[in-house]
Length: 250
Length: 250
Image (tube, rainbow over all chains, first blue to last red; front, side, top):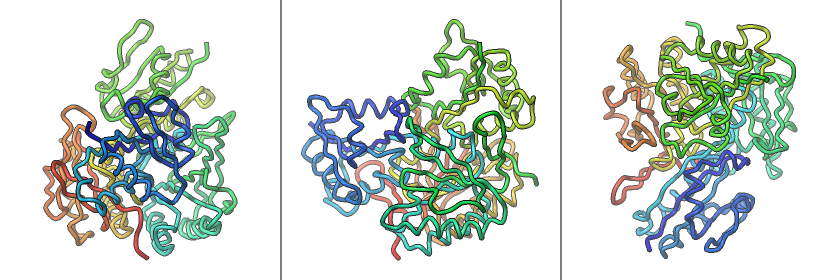
């Protein structure tokens, strides 16, 4: 039996956003590895062993997955959203690069999923419908100065933006600092979108003009989007539609 | 009967990348609207009328979809990839904003899909595993100067990058100009990735150091990715793995 590591994205929460490709990989796995709430989403069955671990142990979890694959197991590593966007694919590959030489020649595959920013964008229209960037606001893994530099340059480029990990209990001040930087860099009232528990039954979408945003509007269950200078809001009965036009005047 | 317009993403090519949510919307549609090759991917059945149209008529197609919904049809607008990333969602919403007042209160939904850059990223590892941006290189809808400005700022921000619509027959010179700008702005040999026909049986992935890139390496069936200054290549038997680490040293 030849082992494998397949790193899959199970989307932001709704099982109807799991691709058939990912579901097939889960159905064929002997072992599933991941952060506790994501492993909980995988249906138990005979022949499948679940290995749930806490947050912030991504490299240990990756090494465990690679060790089991070396022993012949068919291991699936589950990520929320897409595994390649601020998730487990980069962690597993980091463990491969710095780990046992044999791990390089394991059967390693990454299967894409619906990432939170695109589910959030779809939930309110198409705010990322033109050039955009995605920034992880956590400064666990990079200096705050780099985040601030990227925010200023992204504003100067007039990108729409998506922000992952905006605010946690351990660093509650980060999102407020990011908002202040963006308010300074963008002198208009473009909309910021707070999509919480996106695709879940308790999903909420809140649209706030950037000058009115306060740091308490986001938490770790929120993905935050920011329009560009051209983003439009279509008012109507019920929730508005919001989109960034495909064209920019010359 | 109440009409609706549902704008769905059918992924980059492999039907195993279509979410169950999107498949259900297609199964319930009375009418499917879209660009010819995407409408061809939808299985014919009794009760479903297909309306295929050529490229570059996105607003006409959107108006047609909205008119049919006004008449009570359940219309699905199909996009390749994700409908919110350089695709039909922004076109339909533009048609709503500037069209009949009644259209605003139609049942309009956007359902996310697997966008080409994330399928391409997964196919070679996780090159978009850290902060990144997505830029449409077509200058049909925006001035070239804006594209060039965004490329320079994205390089300064040290984003990984994804490029859609890199090169067409009608503007063969655009990709070469973009590459020249990037070669000037990035003074290292970070990898550029050419993912052609991603997720299809004839998919090809080519990894080229940026200084060696030439304009003929991309066409309209290619999505192009560029690593950041920290992107790593893991050599091994067979195709290398490529990833952008989650952390940046302080």
